[in-house]
Amino acid sequence: MPRRPHILLITSDQQRADALGIDGHPVLRTPNLDYLAGNGAWFRSAFSESPTCIPARRVILSGQAPYTSGMVGFYGGYHWNLRHSVASELAANGYQTELIGKTHWHPNRKRFGFQHMLVANSQRDGNDYSDWLNDQGRREVLAGKLHGVETNSFNARPSHLPEGYDLTTWCVNESLKLIKKRDPEAPLFLWLSVVDPHPPFTPPKLYFDRYMARADDIPEPFIGDWARQFDAPNLGLNIQPVDIHLPDAWMRRMRAAYYGLVNHIDDQVNRVFRALSQAGMWRDTVVLYTSDHGEMLGDHNLFRKTWPHQASANIPFILRLPDWLEPESGAVIDQPVGLQDVMPTLLDAAGVAIPDSVDGRSVLPLARGEQPSWRPFLHGEHHGRGTALWSEYAPGHQYLTDGREKYIWYPSGGEEHFFDLARDPQELHNLADVAEAASRLAIWRGQMVEQLRDRPEGFVDGDRLVAGRPQLLPDELRPDLNRRA
Image (cartoon, rainbow, N blue to C red; front, side, top):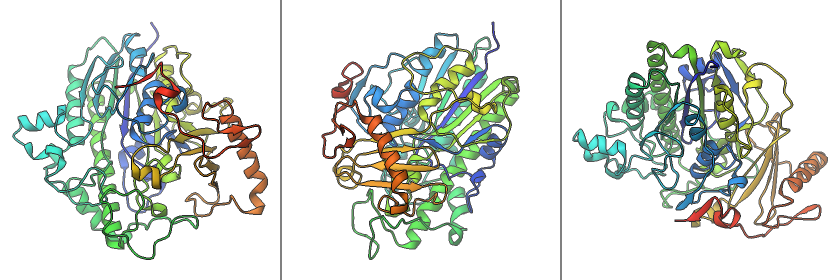
Protein backbone atom coordinates (compact mmCIF):
# COMPACT_ATOMS: atom_id res chain seq x y z
CA MET A 1 0.00 0.00 0.00
CA PRO A 2 1.34 3.50 -0.84
CA ARG A 3 2.54 5.58 2.08
CA ARG A 4 -0.32 7.68 3.41
CA PRO A 5 0.19 10.82 5.49
CA HIS A 6 -1.80 12.00 8.44
CA ILE A 7 -3.69 15.18 7.58
CA LEU A 8 -4.28 18.16 9.86
CA LEU A 9 -6.55 20.85 8.45
CA ILE A 10 -6.64 23.93 10.68
CA THR A 11 -9.12 26.70 9.92
CA SER A 12 -9.47 29.91 11.83
CA ASP A 13 -12.59 32.04 11.43
CA GLN A 14 -12.39 35.58 10.05
CA GLN A 15 -8.59 35.82 9.79
CA ARG A 16 -7.36 38.22 7.14
CA ALA A 17 -4.29 37.30 5.11
CA ASP A 18 -2.11 40.08 6.52
CA ALA A 19 -2.72 38.86 10.09
CA LEU A 20 0.51 36.88 9.98
CA GLY A 21 3.92 37.81 11.32
CA ILE A 22 5.59 36.44 8.20
CA ASP A 23 3.75 39.04 6.13
CA GLY A 24 5.72 41.76 7.91
CA HIS A 25 3.01 42.90 10.30
CA PRO A 26 4.27 45.78 12.46
CA VAL A 27 2.67 44.51 15.70
CA LEU A 28 1.24 41.02 15.42
CA ARG A 29 3.47 38.06 16.17
CA THR A 30 2.68 34.53 14.93
CA PRO A 31 5.98 32.63 15.30
CA ASN A 32 4.47 29.16 14.99
CA LEU A 33 2.53 29.88 11.80
CA ASP A 34 5.61 31.67 10.49
CA TYR A 35 7.61 28.51 11.20
CA LEU A 36 5.00 26.48 9.34
CA ALA A 37 5.28 28.80 6.34
CA GLY A 38 9.06 28.88 6.51
CA ASN A 39 9.16 25.10 6.34
CA GLY A 40 6.33 24.75 3.85
CA ALA A 41 4.58 26.81 1.20
CA TRP A 42 2.95 30.18 1.80
CA PHE A 43 0.29 31.10 -0.77
CA ARG A 44 0.02 34.88 -0.74
CA SER A 45 -2.78 35.12 -3.31
CA ALA A 46 -5.33 32.91 -1.55
CA PHE A 47 -8.95 34.01 -1.54
CA SER A 48 -12.29 33.03 -0.09
CA GLU A 49 -14.63 32.60 -3.05
CA SER A 50 -17.69 33.67 -1.02
CA PRO A 51 -16.35 35.45 2.05
CA THR A 52 -18.79 34.59 4.80
CA CYS A 53 -18.91 31.58 7.11
CA ILE A 54 -21.59 29.33 5.60
CA PRO A 55 -20.67 29.41 1.89
CA ALA A 56 -16.93 29.37 2.60
CA ARG A 57 -17.19 26.25 4.73
CA ARG A 58 -19.26 24.59 2.06
CA VAL A 59 -16.48 25.33 -0.44
CA ILE A 60 -13.91 23.75 1.89
CA LEU A 61 -16.07 20.70 2.53
CA SER A 62 -17.04 20.07 -1.10
CA GLY A 63 -14.18 21.43 -3.19
CA GLN A 64 -16.80 23.22 -5.27
CA ALA A 65 -17.06 26.86 -6.27
CA PRO A 66 -20.05 28.63 -4.68
CA TYR A 67 -22.14 28.64 -7.85
CA THR A 68 -21.59 24.92 -8.48
CA SER A 69 -23.16 24.07 -5.14
CA GLY A 70 -25.67 26.91 -5.25
CA MET A 71 -24.51 28.45 -1.97
CA VAL A 72 -23.38 31.88 -3.15
CA GLY A 73 -23.75 33.68 0.15
CA PHE A 74 -24.75 33.51 3.79
CA TYR A 75 -27.89 31.35 3.66
CA GLY A 76 -28.80 29.51 6.85
CA GLY A 77 -31.52 26.91 7.25
CA TYR A 78 -30.99 25.10 3.96
CA HIS A 79 -30.52 21.35 4.10
CA TRP A 80 -27.24 20.43 2.40
CA ASN A 81 -27.07 17.39 0.17
CA LEU A 82 -23.44 17.13 -0.87
CA ARG A 83 -22.55 13.99 -2.83
CA HIS A 84 -18.86 14.11 -1.96
CA SER A 85 -16.89 15.77 0.80
CA VAL A 86 -13.25 15.79 1.79
CA ALA A 87 -14.15 13.68 4.85
CA SER A 88 -16.31 11.17 2.99
CA GLU A 89 -13.59 10.50 0.41
CA LEU A 90 -10.88 10.08 3.03
CA ALA A 91 -13.10 7.87 5.23
CA ALA A 92 -13.88 5.65 2.24
CA ASN A 93 -10.14 5.18 1.81
CA GLY A 94 -9.35 4.08 5.34
CA TYR A 95 -8.81 7.37 7.15
CA GLN A 96 -10.02 8.05 10.67
CA THR A 97 -11.96 11.28 10.10
CA GLU A 98 -12.50 13.72 12.97
CA LEU A 99 -13.74 17.28 13.36
CA ILE A 100 -13.34 19.48 16.42
CA GLY A 101 -14.83 22.97 16.52
CA LYS A 102 -16.96 24.98 14.12
CA THR A 103 -19.10 23.48 11.37
CA HIS A 104 -21.75 26.13 10.53
CA TRP A 105 -23.59 23.88 8.13
CA HIS A 106 -27.09 22.43 8.14
CA PRO A 107 -28.20 20.19 9.72
CA ASN A 108 -25.74 21.17 12.42
CA ARG A 109 -24.51 17.67 13.29
CA LYS A 110 -24.72 16.07 9.87
CA ARG A 111 -21.40 14.27 9.57
CA PHE A 112 -20.59 14.43 5.83
CA GLY A 113 -18.13 11.56 6.24
CA PHE A 114 -16.72 12.51 9.64
CA GLN A 115 -16.80 9.50 11.92
CA HIS A 116 -16.83 11.68 15.01
CA MET A 117 -17.38 15.39 15.68
CA LEU A 118 -17.20 17.71 18.67
CA VAL A 119 -19.16 20.76 17.56
CA ALA A 120 -18.81 24.30 18.89
CA ASN A 121 -19.99 26.95 16.45
CA SER A 122 -19.68 29.80 18.94
CA GLN A 123 -19.39 30.72 22.59
CA ARG A 124 -23.15 30.36 22.94
CA ASP A 125 -24.78 27.64 24.97
CA GLY A 126 -26.01 24.41 23.41
CA ASN A 127 -22.88 22.83 21.94
CA ASP A 128 -20.18 20.39 23.02
CA TYR A 129 -17.95 23.16 24.35
CA SER A 130 -20.66 24.74 26.48
CA ASP A 131 -21.68 21.29 27.72
CA TRP A 132 -18.09 20.80 28.89
CA LEU A 133 -18.08 24.21 30.55
CA ASN A 134 -21.31 23.36 32.32
CA ASP A 135 -19.71 20.16 33.57
CA GLN A 136 -16.89 22.30 34.95
CA GLY A 137 -19.35 24.55 36.75
CA ARG A 138 -18.69 27.49 34.38
CA ARG A 139 -22.16 28.30 33.10
CA GLU A 140 -21.21 31.96 32.64
CA VAL A 141 -20.44 31.15 29.02
CA LEU A 142 -24.18 31.17 28.29
CA ALA A 143 -24.60 32.98 24.96
CA GLY A 144 -21.32 34.75 25.67
CA LYS A 145 -23.36 37.45 27.39
CA LEU A 146 -21.61 37.76 30.71
CA HIS A 147 -18.91 39.97 29.19
CA GLY A 148 -21.62 42.07 27.51
CA VAL A 149 -20.10 41.87 24.02
CA GLU A 150 -22.32 40.72 21.15
CA THR A 151 -21.16 38.11 18.67
CA ASN A 152 -20.47 40.61 15.86
CA SER A 153 -19.80 43.71 17.93
CA PHE A 154 -16.83 46.02 17.43
CA ASN A 155 -16.53 46.31 21.22
CA ALA A 156 -13.43 44.71 22.69
CA ARG A 157 -12.32 43.63 26.15
CA PRO A 158 -10.53 40.73 27.83
CA SER A 159 -12.42 37.48 28.18
CA HIS A 160 -14.23 36.87 31.45
CA LEU A 161 -12.99 33.26 31.39
CA PRO A 162 -9.55 32.02 32.44
CA GLU A 163 -7.44 30.97 29.44
CA GLY A 164 -7.85 27.30 30.31
CA TYR A 165 -11.59 27.62 29.65
CA ASP A 166 -11.25 29.47 26.35
CA LEU A 167 -12.96 27.97 23.29
CA THR A 168 -9.77 27.79 21.19
CA THR A 169 -7.95 26.20 24.12
CA TRP A 170 -10.77 23.65 24.48
CA CYS A 171 -10.58 22.75 20.78
CA VAL A 172 -6.85 22.14 21.10
CA ASN A 173 -7.23 20.20 24.35
CA GLU A 174 -9.70 17.88 22.65
CA SER A 175 -7.36 17.52 19.69
CA LEU A 176 -4.55 16.40 21.99
CA LYS A 177 -6.81 13.78 23.56
CA LEU A 178 -7.71 12.53 20.10
CA ILE A 179 -4.09 12.24 19.02
CA LYS A 180 -3.39 10.06 22.05
CA LYS A 181 -6.47 7.86 21.53
CA ARG A 182 -6.56 7.59 17.73
CA ASP A 183 -6.64 4.31 15.84
CA PRO A 184 -2.92 3.41 15.62
CA GLU A 185 -3.36 1.52 12.35
CA ALA A 186 -5.28 4.15 10.41
CA PRO A 187 -4.05 7.48 9.05
CA LEU A 188 -5.72 10.40 10.80
CA PHE A 189 -7.64 13.27 9.20
CA LEU A 190 -8.39 15.95 11.76
CA TRP A 191 -10.16 19.20 10.90
CA LEU A 192 -9.39 21.56 13.79
CA SER A 193 -11.86 24.38 13.22
CA VAL A 194 -11.47 27.22 15.72
CA VAL A 195 -13.95 30.08 16.02
CA ASP A 196 -11.44 32.88 16.66
CA PRO A 197 -10.57 35.57 15.66
CA HIS A 198 -14.29 35.99 14.86
CA PRO A 199 -15.94 38.50 17.18
CA PRO A 200 -16.64 38.89 20.05
CA PHE A 201 -13.20 40.44 20.36
CA THR A 202 -12.56 39.01 23.81
CA PRO A 203 -9.15 37.29 23.90
CA PRO A 204 -7.65 35.91 27.12
CA LYS A 205 -6.45 38.80 29.28
CA LEU A 206 -2.73 38.16 28.69
CA TYR A 207 -3.18 38.53 24.93
CA PHE A 208 -5.44 41.57 25.21
CA ASP A 209 -2.96 43.31 27.48
CA ARG A 210 -0.02 42.37 25.23
CA TYR A 211 -1.39 44.32 22.28
CA MET A 212 -3.03 47.14 24.23
CA ALA A 213 0.45 47.80 25.60
CA ARG A 214 1.46 48.57 22.00
CA ALA A 215 -1.70 50.47 21.11
CA ASP A 216 0.24 53.44 19.73
CA ASP A 217 2.02 51.13 17.26
CA ILE A 218 -1.15 49.52 15.93
CA PRO A 219 -1.59 50.48 12.27
CA GLU A 220 -4.49 52.67 11.30
CA PRO A 221 -7.11 51.36 8.86
CA PHE A 222 -6.58 51.80 5.15
CA ILE A 223 -9.19 54.17 3.70
CA GLY A 224 -9.58 54.18 -0.08
CA ASP A 225 -10.47 57.26 -2.09
CA TRP A 226 -13.59 55.38 -3.18
CA ALA A 227 -14.80 54.48 0.34
CA ARG A 228 -17.79 55.98 2.11
CA GLN A 229 -16.52 58.91 4.14
CA PHE A 230 -17.58 60.06 7.60
CA ASP A 231 -17.29 63.54 9.05
CA ALA A 232 -17.12 62.16 12.57
CA PRO A 233 -17.26 58.83 14.39
CA ASN A 234 -20.66 57.19 13.88
CA LEU A 235 -21.52 56.48 17.50
CA GLY A 236 -25.03 55.58 18.58
CA LEU A 237 -25.58 53.20 15.67
CA ASN A 238 -26.13 49.46 15.56
CA ILE A 239 -23.62 47.66 17.78
CA GLN A 240 -23.05 45.15 14.93
CA PRO A 241 -22.61 47.43 11.90
CA VAL A 242 -21.05 46.62 8.57
CA ASP A 243 -19.84 50.15 7.89
CA ILE A 244 -18.04 51.88 10.68
CA HIS A 245 -15.95 54.87 11.72
CA LEU A 246 -14.86 54.61 15.31
CA PRO A 247 -12.91 57.02 17.50
CA ASP A 248 -9.21 56.28 17.20
CA ALA A 249 -8.93 54.80 20.69
CA TRP A 250 -11.86 52.44 20.04
CA MET A 251 -10.38 51.37 16.73
CA ARG A 252 -7.01 50.59 18.30
CA ARG A 253 -8.75 48.66 21.09
CA MET A 254 -10.69 46.56 18.57
CA ARG A 255 -7.57 45.84 16.54
CA ALA A 256 -5.52 45.02 19.64
CA ALA A 257 -8.11 42.45 20.70
CA TYR A 258 -8.19 40.97 17.19
CA TYR A 259 -4.41 40.58 17.14
CA GLY A 260 -4.59 39.04 20.61
CA LEU A 261 -7.01 36.40 19.35
CA VAL A 262 -4.72 35.54 16.42
CA ASN A 263 -1.66 35.39 18.69
CA HIS A 264 -3.55 33.05 21.03
CA ILE A 265 -4.42 30.74 18.12
CA ASP A 266 -0.78 30.71 17.10
CA ASP A 267 0.35 29.63 20.56
CA GLN A 268 -2.35 26.98 20.79
CA VAL A 269 -1.71 25.32 17.41
CA ASN A 270 1.91 24.89 18.46
CA ARG A 271 0.61 22.55 21.16
CA VAL A 272 -0.87 20.38 18.41
CA PHE A 273 2.38 20.39 16.44
CA ARG A 274 4.28 19.32 19.55
CA ALA A 275 1.76 16.57 20.34
CA LEU A 276 2.10 15.19 16.81
CA SER A 277 5.86 15.21 17.19
CA GLN A 278 5.73 13.45 20.56
CA ALA A 279 3.42 10.83 19.07
CA GLY A 280 5.89 10.18 16.24
CA MET A 281 3.41 11.52 13.66
CA TRP A 282 4.87 14.88 12.67
CA ARG A 283 7.25 13.58 10.02
CA ASP A 284 4.26 11.99 8.25
CA THR A 285 1.72 14.81 8.66
CA VAL A 286 0.36 17.20 6.04
CA VAL A 287 -0.72 20.50 7.65
CA LEU A 288 -2.90 23.01 5.87
CA TYR A 289 -3.72 26.25 7.69
CA THR A 290 -6.31 28.64 6.27
CA SER A 291 -9.40 30.67 7.18
CA ASP A 292 -12.94 30.87 5.85
CA HIS A 293 -12.69 34.62 5.16
CA GLY A 294 -11.12 37.78 6.52
CA GLU A 295 -12.24 40.80 8.54
CA MET A 296 -12.40 44.41 7.30
CA LEU A 297 -11.40 45.65 10.77
CA GLY A 298 -12.17 49.26 9.83
CA ASP A 299 -10.40 49.28 6.48
CA HIS A 300 -12.29 51.53 4.05
CA ASN A 301 -14.65 52.36 6.93
CA LEU A 302 -16.03 48.82 6.78
CA PHE A 303 -16.39 46.04 9.32
CA ARG A 304 -16.97 42.28 9.29
CA LYS A 305 -16.90 40.30 6.03
CA THR A 306 -18.81 39.55 2.75
CA TRP A 307 -16.81 42.25 0.98
CA PRO A 308 -14.63 41.44 -2.07
CA HIS A 309 -11.83 43.64 -0.77
CA GLN A 310 -8.48 42.26 0.38
CA ALA A 311 -9.17 42.51 4.11
CA SER A 312 -12.29 40.36 3.71
CA ALA A 313 -11.53 38.05 0.79
CA ASN A 314 -7.73 37.53 0.98
CA ILE A 315 -6.94 34.77 3.49
CA PRO A 316 -3.97 32.86 4.97
CA PHE A 317 -3.11 29.65 3.14
CA ILE A 318 -0.06 27.72 4.40
CA LEU A 319 0.76 24.14 3.40
CA ARG A 320 3.37 21.99 5.10
CA LEU A 321 4.24 18.63 3.54
CA PRO A 322 6.31 15.73 4.88
CA ASP A 323 9.77 15.48 3.36
CA TRP A 324 8.85 12.34 1.45
CA LEU A 325 6.25 14.32 -0.52
CA GLU A 326 9.17 16.41 -1.81
CA PRO A 327 8.12 19.94 -0.86
CA GLU A 328 10.03 23.08 -1.73
CA SER A 329 10.71 24.37 1.78
CA GLY A 330 10.00 28.05 2.34
CA ALA A 331 8.24 28.53 -0.99
CA VAL A 332 6.32 31.78 -1.49
CA ILE A 333 3.67 31.25 -4.15
CA ASP A 334 1.67 33.95 -5.94
CA GLN A 335 -0.63 31.90 -8.18
CA PRO A 336 -4.28 32.50 -7.23
CA VAL A 337 -5.71 29.74 -5.06
CA GLY A 338 -9.01 29.39 -3.20
CA LEU A 339 -10.81 27.35 -0.61
CA GLN A 340 -12.05 25.07 -3.41
CA ASP A 341 -8.45 23.87 -3.63
CA VAL A 342 -8.38 22.51 -0.06
CA MET A 343 -10.23 19.25 -0.76
CA PRO A 344 -8.31 18.24 -3.93
CA THR A 345 -4.99 19.15 -2.28
CA LEU A 346 -5.64 16.94 0.74
CA LEU A 347 -6.98 14.08 -1.38
CA ASP A 348 -3.96 14.33 -3.68
CA ALA A 349 -1.60 14.19 -0.71
CA ALA A 350 -3.43 11.10 0.54
CA GLY A 351 -3.31 9.39 -2.86
CA VAL A 352 -7.12 9.45 -3.08
CA ALA A 353 -8.94 10.03 -6.36
CA ILE A 354 -10.51 13.48 -6.70
CA PRO A 355 -14.25 13.28 -7.57
CA ASP A 356 -15.45 14.82 -10.81
CA SER A 357 -17.75 17.07 -8.76
CA VAL A 358 -14.74 19.08 -7.52
CA ASP A 359 -13.94 22.44 -9.13
CA GLY A 360 -10.71 23.08 -7.26
CA ARG A 361 -7.21 21.85 -8.03
CA SER A 362 -4.45 20.32 -5.96
CA VAL A 363 -1.77 22.84 -5.08
CA LEU A 364 0.80 20.09 -4.41
CA PRO A 365 2.65 20.73 -7.69
CA LEU A 366 3.03 24.40 -6.76
CA ALA A 367 4.26 23.47 -3.27
CA ARG A 368 6.86 21.19 -4.87
CA GLY A 369 8.28 23.99 -6.96
CA GLU A 370 6.83 22.68 -10.20
CA GLN A 371 5.38 24.96 -12.86
CA PRO A 372 2.00 23.47 -13.76
CA SER A 373 -0.44 25.22 -16.03
CA TRP A 374 -2.57 27.16 -13.55
CA ARG A 375 -5.83 29.09 -13.59
CA PRO A 376 -5.36 32.66 -14.85
CA PHE A 377 -7.65 34.07 -12.16
CA LEU A 378 -10.04 33.12 -9.38
CA HIS A 379 -13.74 33.99 -9.39
CA GLY A 380 -15.57 34.99 -6.22
CA GLU A 381 -19.06 36.18 -5.42
CA HIS A 382 -21.53 36.96 -2.66
CA HIS A 383 -25.25 37.50 -2.77
CA GLY A 384 -27.02 40.81 -2.12
CA ARG A 385 -29.94 39.20 -0.31
CA GLY A 386 -29.84 38.52 3.38
CA THR A 387 -30.08 40.69 6.46
CA ALA A 388 -31.27 44.26 6.05
CA LEU A 389 -27.81 45.52 6.97
CA TRP A 390 -26.08 43.47 4.30
CA SER A 391 -28.66 44.32 1.67
CA GLU A 392 -28.18 48.04 2.29
CA TYR A 393 -24.46 48.31 2.93
CA ALA A 394 -22.91 45.16 1.45
CA PRO A 395 -24.48 44.75 -1.99
CA GLY A 396 -23.98 41.55 -3.91
CA HIS A 397 -20.75 41.37 -5.86
CA GLN A 398 -18.80 39.37 -8.41
CA TYR A 399 -15.02 39.56 -8.43
CA LEU A 400 -12.07 38.25 -10.44
CA THR A 401 -8.45 38.38 -9.36
CA ASP A 402 -5.09 36.96 -10.36
CA GLY A 403 -3.44 38.31 -7.22
CA ARG A 404 -1.94 41.24 -9.14
CA GLU A 405 -5.16 42.96 -10.21
CA LYS A 406 -8.76 42.73 -9.09
CA TYR A 407 -11.99 43.52 -10.90
CA ILE A 408 -15.25 43.84 -8.96
CA TRP A 409 -18.73 44.19 -10.42
CA TYR A 410 -21.81 44.97 -8.31
CA PRO A 411 -24.84 43.47 -10.10
CA SER A 412 -27.43 45.53 -8.21
CA GLY A 413 -26.37 48.87 -9.70
CA GLY A 414 -23.62 47.97 -12.16
CA GLU A 415 -20.83 49.81 -10.32
CA GLU A 416 -17.24 48.67 -10.87
CA HIS A 417 -14.04 48.64 -8.87
CA PHE A 418 -10.67 47.94 -10.46
CA PHE A 419 -7.50 47.73 -8.38
CA ASP A 420 -3.84 47.33 -9.27
CA LEU A 421 -2.87 45.12 -6.33
CA ALA A 422 0.79 44.98 -7.33
CA ARG A 423 1.16 48.75 -6.89
CA ASP A 424 -1.77 49.35 -4.54
CA PRO A 425 -2.14 46.28 -2.29
CA GLN A 426 -4.40 48.15 0.13
CA GLU A 427 -6.88 49.05 -2.65
CA LEU A 428 -6.68 52.75 -1.95
CA HIS A 429 -7.34 53.85 -5.54
CA ASN A 430 -10.21 52.70 -7.71
CA LEU A 431 -9.04 52.73 -11.34
CA ALA A 432 -12.42 52.00 -12.90
CA ASP A 433 -12.74 55.59 -14.19
CA VAL A 434 -9.05 56.18 -14.89
CA ALA A 435 -8.35 56.52 -18.62
CA GLU A 436 -4.92 54.92 -18.41
CA ALA A 437 -6.47 51.74 -17.00
CA ALA A 438 -9.35 51.50 -19.49
CA SER A 439 -7.81 48.82 -21.71
CA ARG A 440 -6.97 46.54 -18.78
CA LEU A 441 -10.39 47.13 -17.28
CA ALA A 442 -12.03 46.13 -20.57
CA ILE A 443 -10.13 42.83 -20.57
CA TRP A 444 -11.28 42.02 -17.05
CA ARG A 445 -14.86 43.04 -17.86
CA GLY A 446 -14.78 40.68 -20.81
CA GLN A 447 -13.52 37.87 -18.57
CA MET A 448 -16.43 38.52 -16.21
CA VAL A 449 -18.88 38.36 -19.11
CA GLU A 450 -17.56 34.92 -20.03
CA GLN A 451 -17.60 33.82 -16.38
CA LEU A 452 -21.28 34.74 -15.99
CA ARG A 453 -22.53 34.15 -19.53
CA ASP A 454 -24.60 31.03 -18.86
CA ARG A 455 -25.86 31.97 -15.40
CA PRO A 456 -29.63 31.69 -14.89
CA GLU A 457 -29.81 35.11 -13.22
CA GLY A 458 -29.34 36.75 -16.62
CA PHE A 459 -26.23 38.70 -15.68
CA VAL A 460 -25.09 38.78 -19.32
CA ASP A 461 -26.75 39.97 -22.52
CA GLY A 462 -24.56 39.44 -25.56
CA ASP A 463 -21.21 40.93 -24.64
CA ARG A 464 -22.31 43.19 -21.80
CA LEU A 465 -23.03 42.81 -18.11
CA VAL A 466 -26.62 43.47 -17.07
CA ALA A 467 -27.30 45.12 -13.73
CA GLY A 468 -30.42 44.82 -11.62
CA ARG A 469 -31.07 41.12 -12.09
CA PRO A 470 -32.62 39.33 -9.08
CA GLN A 471 -30.44 37.03 -6.98
CA LEU A 472 -31.59 33.41 -6.94
CA LEU A 473 -31.85 31.47 -3.68
CA PRO A 474 -29.93 28.20 -3.10
CA ASP A 475 -32.90 25.94 -3.81
CA GLU A 476 -33.54 27.90 -7.00
CA LEU A 477 -29.94 27.61 -8.18
CA ARG A 478 -29.40 23.96 -7.17
CA PRO A 479 -32.58 22.25 -5.90
CA ASP A 480 -30.79 18.90 -6.02
CA LEU A 481 -28.25 20.07 -3.44
CA ASN A 482 -30.26 22.51 -1.34
CA ARG A 483 -33.73 22.51 0.12
CA ARG A 484 -35.30 24.75 2.71
CA ALA A 485 -35.33 23.14 6.14
